[in-house]
Length: 160
View 1 (tube, rainbow, N blue to C red):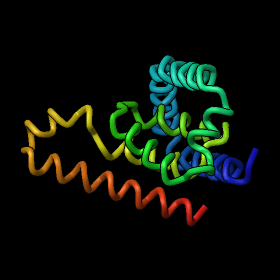
View 2 (cartoon, rainbow, N blue to C red):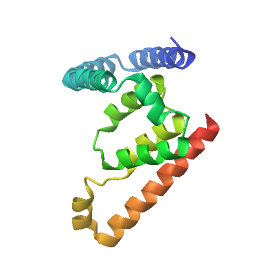
View 3 (cartoon, helix red, strand yellow):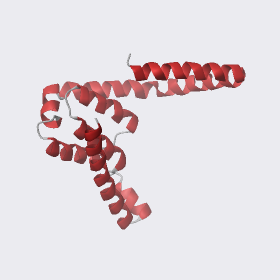
């Protein structure tokens, strides 16, 4: 267990204890409600685990390292950003997927480019966005989002 997980666990236990002391009934009701919500999400969480397993099964770590590794960061960043732009995956699936890709040998910059374009750029949702907000807005928002996603990826590469 890393220091961040341990820190979050300690803070959670302290805050839950404070909440129990302040109002036991509300805290217990909130815990029951969160238990129900977690039960509803259990199928999606299991699906995420299977999806990550399938991706890592069909794409060997050596291929991930070759394509998204540090050998050609510029090309792999652009490819990852383009893939993220046209992919429609919920963010709660994307974060563990990107973590698994990094563990398999992908470089941070392409991984962040994939993740940020995945959440910020919407090629798949472009027709709906164009219909609701207009062509000029949809194009400018997606282009600016793509550029800023690349800048965020480069910034994360410098930071990490």
